[in-house]
Image (tube, rainbow, N blue to C red; front, top):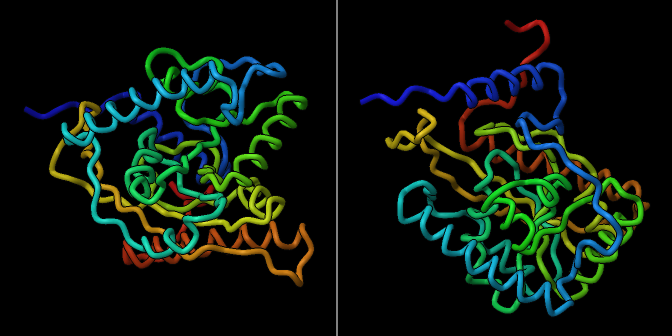
Amino acid sequence: MAVEKSKDRLEVLARIEEYEKNQWWSKDVEDDPPTRQLQPGEVDYTRRKLRSKIQTHFANKAGWKFIQGLVKSGALLMDEPEGLENYEAVKDQGVVMTCNHFNAFDNFAVLLTIDKYLKHHIMWKVIREGNYTNFPGFYGYLFRGCNTLPFSSNYSVTKEFFDGIKNLLKRKQKILVYAEQGMWWNYRKPRPLTAGAARFAIENNVPLLPMFITMRDSDKIGDDGFPIQIYKVHILPALYADPNKSKKQNIEWLREKNYEMWKEVYEKTYGIPLTYLQKEDK
């Protein structure tokens, strides 16, 4: 029996098309719950406090059980990753990682790919403020507990955020940043990146490790009426600061180079040139 396509997902796809035509690359297409501003001291960014450690332990345990359930049920499907040697080359130091953002499960794909190499290190995730403060239910629990780093609109909290990033990278942790920002559901193209990930890498003198996830339709139809996607994680060579460039130049260079590398993977995998819809397209 055919599953009717979700009205909600059809609306999101239409919104993505509109945003692409208008080049609103970092804008969120989902109807996320309203947010509130984080307050100073509300987030223990490095999980040093005993209470934070306990909460994180149980949240990660629940998160792993959830991920394993997704894999077992066929809701999360993956091809063999490509470029693991590029992760192995930087696994013993602090790293800022980037990944395209198209699904709530895309960070699970990254984690499953690199988990056996993490050992005593942890994969941290930068998330939007509203996902931490106001997201309901089980997902909200994971957003608050599973080594997440909410980026706040509160200046004082932003300082705590940057101090946390610095501390974690000194401890040789791995930090995943969605440099495109907003999640565009099942969007296969790379989008122009914001400068945040490059800035974190340059300011903390660590490599930037680009990852790009490609996908293909499986023969399974999800509850939303669309084919469940099979993900393939591509880990690309790490990028480093150029000593002959200024901080500003390096940030821009890393941002542009990351995008170019994603573009190459996209065109090679899908066998088509990367083009975007224009306003005049119907």
